[in-house]
Length: 433
Ligand code: SAH
Ligand code: SF4
Ligand code: F3S
Image (cartoon, rainbow, N blue to C red; front, side, top):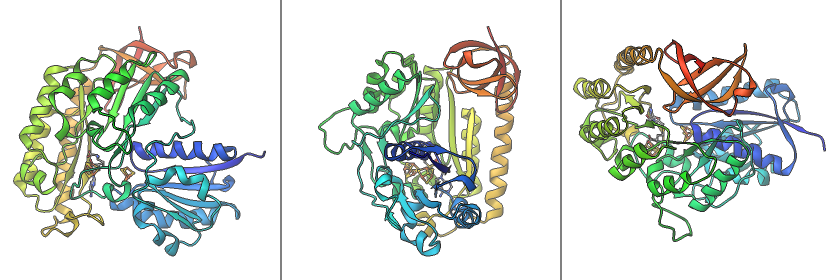
């Protein structure tokens, strides 16, 4: 059988990255596909889209135009992911050269619809929580594993519930099965994925199972050969003591945690429907710092949410000062369709939001420079997972820092002590000791 070529572009979050792997696996179960970076070689082009902020959506249509210009005449174009979910049929109306549209929650239907001209599958209630996808992983040393689909929150700024539907947890036995398989093919590290991982176990489709996130972590930790567990994203609201104790005391759980703040102002958090206060957030971070002083904390912050006053923004700056996040993902608020905040009065002018974002990022850069400089001569356990050019190998420390060392293939798949020899904002150089 001749091998077809697939060009796939993945935007957005880790869940989309995993969806792309699932799509490759699904295609391969039907007929062999090989990935290509050359658009003009591709028989199938997939754009796996994100719609969390406005920019990527407007880029989609100009990109389809470019693809049409350079692609083989016979090549098909598919639009998948979150923008596919919420624009659906409109994508084909606006760009009839698109062959199919497959929503974020409908990935397992790919091989069924690929040959159906102008197929649109964007069912938000579609439930493949018990579906076993074929095996495909970009990196054999670490595996992403979905533990839930969708989101049961309704943060007023966020489009995700409208693109990924209600939350459903995947049965824990299936999760354990998948991880065991990944470990037997060489993965020592896994990343558990869900929009609110620590809300795991609230909604199952069929099973009577009673399992919360802490219990799931305990169950997964028993898998022989699995050495490192990461997860993203937990929700601050569900960070109870039981969970934080497990995070701190379980040696297989990497000491890196994402605690998405969004805003430091309790008033804004209420308008955002986040369900927690500034004090609760600070209390949870303090608890992490106390129970696991070696842990790093990352966060997401939105500036310029409707009604954000100078005082509200100062609250956000205050949380930054108090927690000193080791990593920050910060965004200007972007009004999205299907969200209530888009209709709020008092949208913040762009210039004010931009100035706040600049100030936030500037201050965080200073913090991160101090954090990274203090790493000089420290020793970390690094799991090597990628060959780089110039005889270098990269990996991550337990607390999530990116490391580079001189070396070759034999380091891959090993967890070794590394001493830091050079620091920079984004990564550390070191030597294996
Ligand atoms: N489930 C995750 C977030 C997923 S979306 C959580 O609750 O933390 C990833 C991030 O995008 C969010 O944390 C938020 O900071 C940002 N985001 C979501 N909607 C946005 C919007 N309308 N404008 C700007 N940033 C947004
Ligand atoms: Fe969006 Fe909120 Fe759900 Fe996160 S928890 S995906 S921010 S609605
Ligand atoms: Fe984007 Fe969808 Fe993820 S909107 S951030 S790809 S859940």
